Image (cartoon, rainbow over all chains, first blue to last red):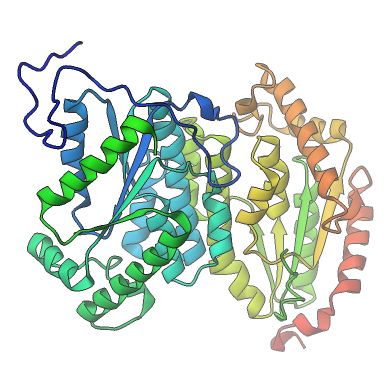
Length: 257
Length: 229
C-alpha cells in the first residue's frame, strides 16, 4: 500500500530536504567472509545489512527501534534479527544456557547453528527482497565471547566464513563501569553469562562483571583492526548517538560504503 | 591438520568405524567391543548423532524440514562437540579405548555431498583428535542398499537424501545419495589412512581381521583394569 506522508517527517533533521521523495539505495556488491553458503547468488542480494554491536546495556535495542522508525518513515522496508532467535535451536540453546551444561566448543557451535539458521531463513530472504536488515549483534559478539574464553581464532574465522560481510557495523562502546550502572537501572541484577561467571575470573559477581566486560571491550577493539567496524561512543545521549547513526547509515544507503 | 590421540600423548586410544549404512560396521564394532570387554579392557562405545540435548533440535529440524546443508552440518558438529568434550576426550585422557560408530569422516563425506565446502567442514572439526585406527567397511553399493532396504522399507527424509532432490522416489534418491557418499569416502580414503575391510566377506572373517589389527596396533595389556589383571 502506498503511504504518503501528510507532512515532512519530523525526525529527519540531518536532511533538511525532507520530502515525499524516497531515496532508492544504490546496489553494492556483497561478499562472504570466507567459504560462504552453498547456492547463494550474491548478486541477488539488493538490500543492506546493518549491524549494531555492543554489550547488554549499551543501548543497542533503543537505537535499533529508533532506526526502524526512521528507516520505515523514509520508505525502507526493514527486518530485525538478533542472536538466539532462530526457530531451529533457540529453545535448546536457552535450555543449555540455563543449565550451563555445555562445554565451550559445543556452545559455540550451537550459537553458530542459530546464526546460520537466521542467516539463511531470515537475513538472506530479506536482503533478496531489498530490505534493510538491522542485526542486533552479529558474528563479532559471538567471536569475542569465544576469544575471551580462549578459543582458537583461526577456528572461529573458518566457522564464521559462512557469514555475509555487512554494509556497515557500529559498535556502541560503553565502559564497564557505566554498563554496570545501566544494567542495575534496568534489571537490578547481573546476568550470569554477561558477567562471565563461567570463566572463574572472580567469585564476586560484580567484580567478575567488570573484568569480563573489560576483556570483551579489549577483544572488540582488537577485532576492530581486522574487521574495520566503526566504534561509536555509547556514553553520549541517546539522541546524539542516534543522529550519528542516522547520518552514517544515510551515507551507506545513498552510495554504498 | 589434526593429530591422532597417540600423537597428542593421551593414554587412551580411539578406534573409528566408517562405511555406508548397511555395510555391517555396527555389527563389527559391537563384536569388537564385546571382545575387548571380555579381555578386561576399559572400553567406551559412542555412536554418531546421539547427544541428548542436541538430539531434540536435530529431530525437530529434520521433522519440520528446517535444515539447510549448512545448518545440517552445524547441528551435527554441535552434537559431535558435545559428545567429544564431555565424553570422548575425558575418557581418552583417562586411558580408555574409545570405539566410535562413525566419526568426523561421516561429516566430511555426507556434508560435502550436500554441497558444503570441504575445507570449511574440516575446519569445523579441526578441534577433534584423529583416531589411531580407522576401519572402513567397504561393501558393494548394491549389498549395502539391499541390507538397508530389506530391513526397513520406510526411509526417512534426510536418510534418503531427499533434501538433495536427486529423485522424487525415496528409494531411487537413497541409491543415488549413497552412491555419492561412497565416492566421497573413496576420495578421502588415502589421506586419512583408512584400513579397508571387505564387508562383502563373512562376518566372522571380517571380525578376525579387525581383532588382529587392533591387537597389532594397541597393547591391550595397558588397557586392562586393575581387577582384571
